[in-house]
Length: 87
View 1 (tube, rainbow, N blue to C red):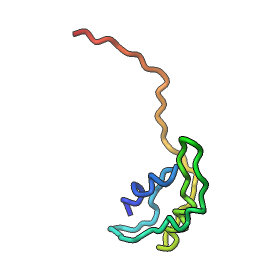
View 2: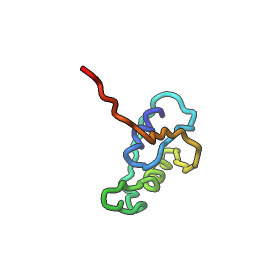
View 3: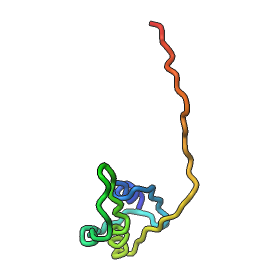
View 4: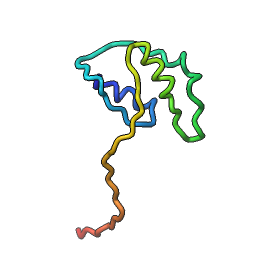
């Protein structure tokens, strides 16, 4: 299930954490296309949130996505100066 986060990234505008506790590799097919009516078209330049369609497809194989808010670490750089380097 470790590779599932990388698989889901292009489809979801959020970070995905694996909480299944499943180890090893699994092979299954997700038919997200049949649920494409579950999400709206994105704004120009935006990304589609296909989470609802993806969640419906994942439920067919016994998985689900739960949206949760959690604290996260953020690095903020508020000032940068370019220092000249002598040759």
